[in-house]
Image 1 (cartoon, rainbow, N blue to C red):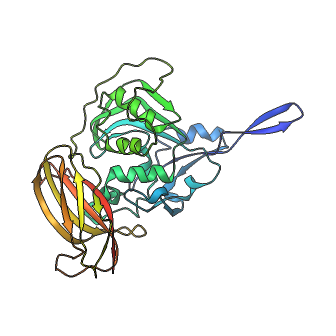
Image 2 (image 1 turned 45 degrees about the horizontal axis):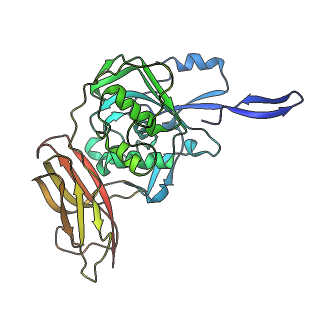
Length: 346
């Protein structure tokens, strides 16, 4: 994580000192670190300047998301990764994903989020579920804004296709991708997997935010040539874009309403609701169901909210989230979420 070399003046000119480095991971819920099974513990016994750290053992801090954030205004991340004068490398596996389509270098940062802060009672066996309840694509953007990647590596020597990340199938692609711009590296990863460039929503958000390219046309690939391998994609919920409330602030005393517009790529079933979910102590509280799962045609719809809860009472002033859920059927467990922020004034 720190810059690997420090220039040190000497009588013989400039020499370079190897700085201490930290390799971090966040193991699955209830599981020990993977450093031992993967051989890291044995290898790095001979390199005292390298520390192996399970992020779950450290301190987490609530860090503001630059620009106000997508799903969160502030997000819990390890204080270790926010230390100044560090060079941050994301080392990801190339794999398909049932919620995000792919896991590549930018999606890899989900492991930074506190598993305890973002656990939700409905799925305790799946840590960080609150990130999904607000929209995993939006949360990925927030994590990358809080801790930008300095260098991205995608290990596709062995990847995973199919219903990843839990039930996929190993596949040998014998490819390693690396570069300074994580979005560019991830887009080349899509090419290797033969997944369309517009298929991954968080990469599209990143391009719209000018974090990198929207396709691979202007990316220069150096090194050995590779052979694309058509990864079997996971079954995923319908693609859903962030809802936008207009106006984003309404006054209860003035009797104002807001129009909430969202987009879907294909016709599907959607649910529209108003929730609160504290950044400091995440826990979803439902205030209003604007409509339960109904069939909505692409490109989406607009729903209105008048600042009232399900009982017809005006909600208290504060920050609320318009949350949309998208699913192929009303009873499917494949659900995509996305939220948009609304401020309610007195």
